[in-house]
Amino acid sequence: MKAIIGRTILLTLTFSAIVAVFFYFFIDGRLVEYQYLLFNMEAADMPLIAWLFSTIFIISLVIAGWIGQNGRTKENIIIGKLQDLYAKQEFTKSNKVKRKTNRSIEQLYEVLEAQRNSLRRITDERVETQDQLIQERIIQERQRLARELHDSVSQQLFAASMLLSALAEQAEEGPIHKPLLQVEKMVQQAQLEMRALLLHLRPAALHNQTLAKGLEELLSELQEKVTFDITHRLEDIELSKGAEDHLFRIAQETLSNTLRHAKATEVEILLIERDGLAILRVQDNGVGFKQDDGKGGSYGLQNVKERAIEIGGSCKIVSVPSQGTIVEVKLPILKGELADDSSAVGG
Image 1 (cartoon, rainbow, N blue to C red):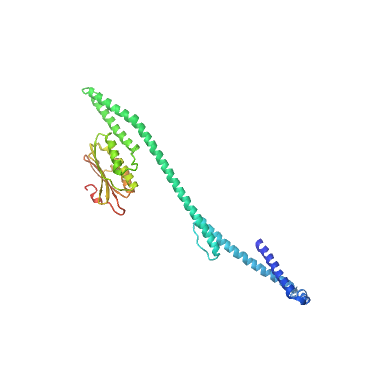
Image 2 (cartoon, rainbow, N blue to C red):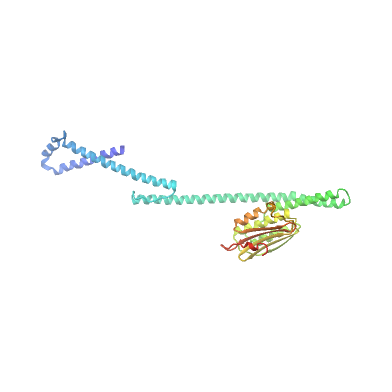
């Protein structure tokens, strides 16, 4: 309201000055006549000059109100556009404001959008870096635990197994021979559990090697620690880094489960490429399990299925009691190709 009053007074003074200048320069020698007309001649009991200034004031008030209303309208439009930039993160041009104003708001929107994208990228990179640091610390801690278990508990179990074996041979005819054999068997089972645990805690990394090379090193290291025979056929297959890592972990998971539960004497590992598919198969001649009794999950293969799905592959498990188990994962090598599950085991 103060702005309208101030603007009205300014316009009134401006128009009055224009009228005064007009009378001064253009009336010339007839000033006396016009003085009489303006000051003595009345209309509705008001001198003509009063009507003149009243008209000027009213016109100034109307113009000031129109200017104020137009300014408020444009101000509301600009405020709405700025609120859209903040709340909706969008900008649309308006025909009610000048092109220059539209362009200025659009430039502001472009700057804010660029800053938002930059902040999102920085935030994502920070989260990825934090996740990577957490994973590295987890791996370091698992490796530390694996070293301590290997240097202490695993060695003690081995020594206990050797001692029990010697005692069982000395007491072959005594009453404690059978209990000693049972304890020795329990210690040997604990050794197997410990080796499986160490395989989980201290997984070998590919270190920029191919999947076949990494599996070969893993199997060579494992063969020195287990009693069953391991045979393998490994082909070099070009896969993405994520697919290689998942297949490597699937092999570790399956071998760990075989070590803990299968009681196998032979294990075969197969990594081949057939018909555009990468095929990883782990087969043992262990105790197996019935697939329809709901105990398949206890065999620890749920993680294998989940990892296969994550890389777009398929997993098939065939197990026959007293005959063994086959775990096979198929992964399309070329994008768009699908695994043919019809030959999951036989091929």
